[in-house]
Length: 151
Figure: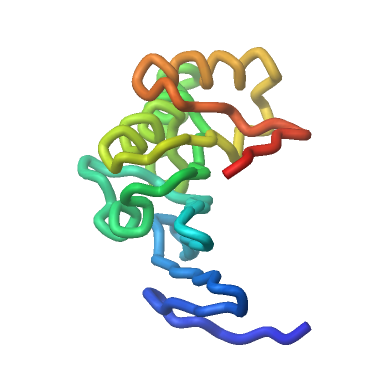
């Protein structure tokens, strides 16, 4: 195995026609999101990212038209705003299920995978996040152990 530093916005071409693009996402300690393309398909992995009043232009460029967007949906909108326990999560670097659905719809994504669930959420809470996101973007699934997605 060998490791290499990458620059933000760099595209890496791998053997077999696979390419990997990256973009810096919204997280206090910094994080990169990735778009992996192969055979005319694209999967975007957007972990540890927080939404703001507009769609992050870097995320939009990375995820536009992707077959699958794997998106940080740590909180519900109510948890994010602090309406559940009085502790707003603004600035913590994580997003919501409904924001993920809105972004997927806006960017013409084919399937949204909600992931990075808050460890305090049980299976029923995750299923409810999935249900609510589907009202905005029907092609949504919550990540769970054993989930397989065919491209």
